[in-house]
Amino acid sequence: RPRPRQPVPDVPEPRRPVLLLRRPSPKAVRSAITDTAVVTGRNLRHFIRQPDLLVFSTIQPVLFVLLFVYVFGGAIGRSLPHGVGYVDFLLPGIFVQSVTFGASQTAVGLKEDLTRGVVDRFRSMPMARSAVLAGRTMADLVRNIAIIGLMIAVGYLVGFRFLGGVGGAVACVAVVAAFGLALSWIFAFVALTVRGAETAQTAGFVVIFPLVFASSVFVPVATFPDWLQTFAKINPVTVTADAARSLALYGTPASLGAAAAWIGGLLAVFIPLSVWRYRRIS
Image (cartoon, rainbow, N blue to C red; front, side, top):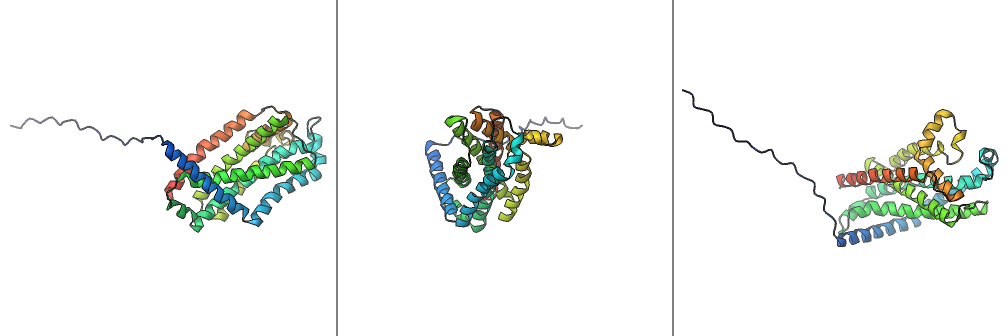
């Protein structure tokens, strides 16, 4: 006679680990800010001590201003709204173009630090890990603002004026600088992904070049073919250039919401991606 089967007790399923997010202490926050400031200062000193990089980083945007104003201004100026000079139309776009191209320096500088072992030395120190990436992007933010200031000075020499007043001028520079910061985080992720500094720079140029020239940086989008206008109108470079131009010319925040959405979205995506990738190579 078979023995009755004993009931099998229910075994609870193993609990999955839960990711606990801890709020950093005020001391940790102060330490991270201090470490970021130290790394930012180090990167700025490194930039200043490279005369060739300093010269070419400042000469390139100035040449763009002079060449486009005096070579293309006569032809392109005819397609602008009545009462808007080409130099006033161009300068806000050149601001955006400069920070866009300059963002690739984030990838090059960070990759060089990784290759030369500078980042490894930072890791051996009792400092916040976030300071390495934040210090690099903040240094590039300061550099972008300085270059914008230089272009404003050159622009005033060739007839540019902030027609939207002081408030519009400050808001224009702030929007462009924030866009440059968002792009710097993209290129920080690129630097942590590719193998060499040259590859990082080339990869950035391949993406940046069509975004800049298929935008409203140099000419109105209405002059493009219909098929290209569709892309240009949603291009983040166009959206940011239009917002900066509206603030500089009229002091009104046209396209500012779309520009803020692009900037916020890029930061929300690429800051966590960069931090994740940085921890993977640690």
